[in-house]
Amino acid sequence: MVMTTKERTELRNELVSQGYAWEYVDEWQPKTTLYLHRARTNPEGDVVKPVGTKISGVPGNPDYVARKARIGMLPYPPSDTCECKWCAVGNVNKDKVTDSGEKVDEMPESATCSECGKVERALTSQAAQMKIRVHLKTHSA
Image 1: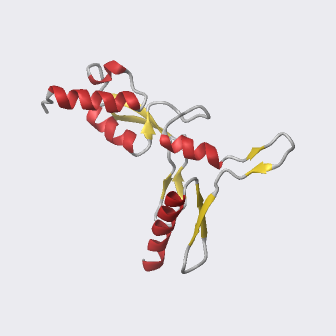
Image 2: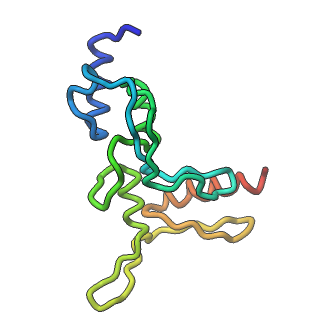
Image 3: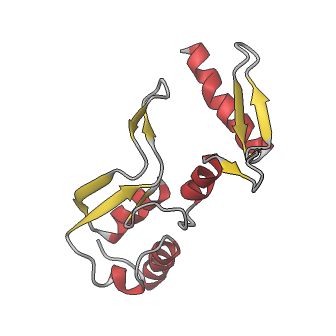
């Protein structure tokens, strides 16, 4: 596939913003290793592959890794200092305590399912509402 200069620049900028090296578009390897920064779940919500799972031997094509980066598969393992959007939310889920030993509530917003009463918590009210919309699909299935 032939890429225009504009497409190449856009792809390079997207990959660099996800943590890839500047020269990745020009010097990519045929196979690479990616790490999950977002847990994979089945339709029931059970975790199938946890965060940090190493996936070896995936194609190293820049288009492919850019698509995978959009869904939480990055070339470096997740950590407390990772700034990707999945780790930023995931790090908030870890229990944080003050110096006095009190737990800090890091998920200030919540939404409740109108059918079963399940409460979903998130950083923003929009994210909590989105979680409830996804949850409501389990009632109609």
